[in-house]
Length: 124
Image (cartoon, rainbow, N blue to C red; front, side, top):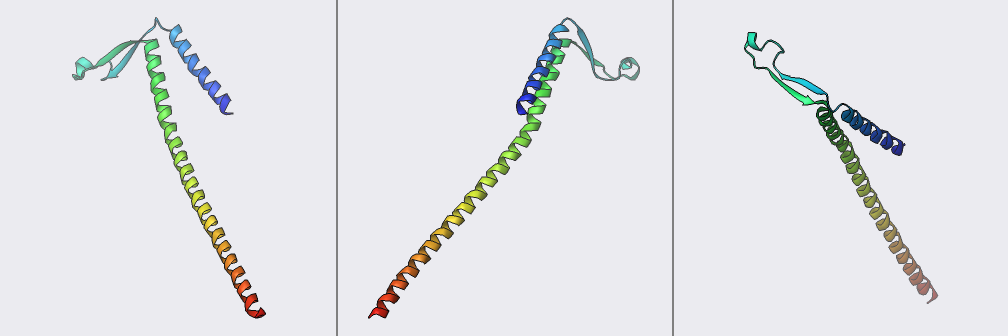
């Protein structure tokens, strides 16, 4: 499933690049600030920018990729933090299990010693 999603993602990016290259000679007028056509009547400055459509497409593609990486990075870091916490919990439980096992072994050795001493005391 992961491989299919990666292939689809790469194909979509290549499709956007192809469309940008195919529309390279086209010019796009962007209205960035102010109300269009009312600059003289209201006294507001109007700011427009003419861009090549391919440049605009690549800018939007780059911003979209950066946003997606940042957005998914949050989820990745959260999952990584949860995984590290789970590993620490496993280490703690394994240490607890090994200390319990060693305590049982020590108690069994003490019981064996006491049984041997009791047998020697009864044989005398």
